[in-house]
Amino acid sequence: VSPTVSTHVVACHNVLGGVIDSFDNLIEYSPEWFRRFGVQVKHSTEVTAVDAGRRFVTMVSLANGEEETIDYDNLVIATGSIPKVPPIPGITRHDGSLIERVFTLRTIEDALGIARAIDSANHCLIIGAGLIGLETAEALRSRMGSAIGQVSLVDTEPHVLATMVDPDMARVLEDSVASHGVDFLPSTTVTQIQSEVQCHVKCRSARGEESSHSADLIVVAVGCNPDIALGKMAGCLIGPTGGIVVDGCCRTSISGVYAAGDCTEYRDFVTGHPLLVGLGSVAVRQGRVAGINAVGGVEQVAEGLLNSRTTRLFGLEVAAVGPTQCELQERGINPIVGKVTSSTRPAYFPGGKRITVKLLVHPDDARLIGAQVVGDEGVHLRADVLATAILSSMKVGRFLQLETCYAPSVAPTLDCVTLAAEAAYTRWTRDRRDKERTSD
Ligand SMILES: Cc1cc2nc3c(=O)[nH]c(=O)nc-3n(C[C@H](O)[C@H](O)[C@H](O)COP(=O)(O)OP(=O)(O)OC[C@H]3O[C@@H](n4cnc5c(N)ncnc54)[C@H](O)[C@@H]3O)c2cc1C
Image (cartoon, rainbow, N blue to C red; front, side, top):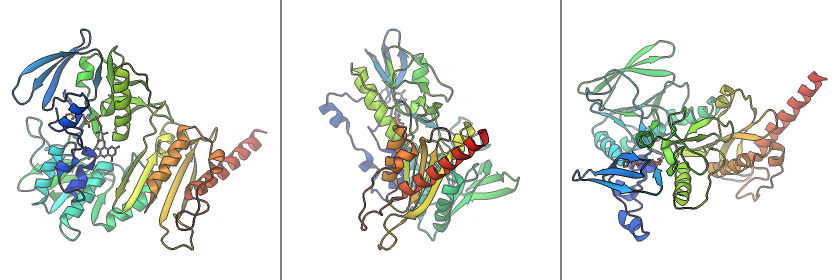
């Protein structure tokens, strides 16, 4: 459907915040680029029907309304996801569209709408303090200038980035959010929006306290639902999370139909539970596998999703791999935790930056099953090292033996990931000794 190709929606907030000059710079691959590789791109065209039995799709040009059918041998569905809009009274018009001054952020068109609205905005409210909500808050703050107006974040969760980090790791981030002039209202639900010259927003906290806010611009960032309309038409099995169920080869339940990206559901590597794909990193890997297999190749993604995710917010880098401690506990796994705060260089060497690593270890077999890292620098590569260990089902004792690089100007003798592993290993061996003693 999109009029642009391979647009980097992931970087929309970077244009809003002024880090990247123009939305045009986000379009990395043009239809011409694809044509050179023998791929025909039909942009501004909507696929309206799939007949998986007779293997053809029907499409309509959004430019001139012309309809066309195309036969296929194999089909890849990569329709992405649609932003959720919470059922807040007043948030939509009668036809279901969002009222004036209220936006979601998924496409470049959404970002353009927000960019136009910022110029006359003095008070911006963001509903949802996840990755996109926080990145938008930072972009708005930077665009408005730190001394002007107000940016507020509201979330029903008690802390920011609740699907990425645990409350203890979120705290340092929340300090940074506050110091950059963003107001965070935790455990708070927006209960009503009224549109007049400004939007009037009513909120209720978990303790029942009511508050009112006015906003010139509201961005709704509460997650996405997979766009499964075509998948359903093809008869694909839809999983409990609402995504198209795929296997490691990106095959759906229907012969000749593959699916990839945000419209799909795969399993969590650690818990085995179904999980919606919601990351560009995974979408790209699945897309490659689905594409190769659809033309007769044999490729697979990993046995499950590690959900390796990272961002940089208000000067702090954050990264996480695998489920959080809270998620694991909800699944009945009470992980052993190893957590340290140290420096990215030896204490005596100038320029070292603070970094906190939290490791989660399976209580039964000491496997590494989750990691969170927050710091000023060097965060995502450490998380990637931990992702390697998790993917290899490495035990924390083995990880501890990892010989990491050392040079005072670059890295300390024992890196913070090793120190966190040591803390977790010590705790795990002590717990096991205690269990053995009680069972004797
Ligand atoms: C602001 C923002 C920041 C993000 N940052 C990150 C990040 O830093 N790291 C990360 O890993 N992920 C990030 N993501 C998530 C990432 O963008 C998505 O996971 C990724 O784009 C999913 O790719 P996809 O191809 O599955 O879906 P999409 O990129 O959504 O593409 C789906 C395409 O299908 C088209 N389509 C749908 N239905 C039809 C139809 N019937 N006919 C024709 N075309 C159709 C849509 O128009 C769309 O162009 C971010 C997302 C947003 C919104």
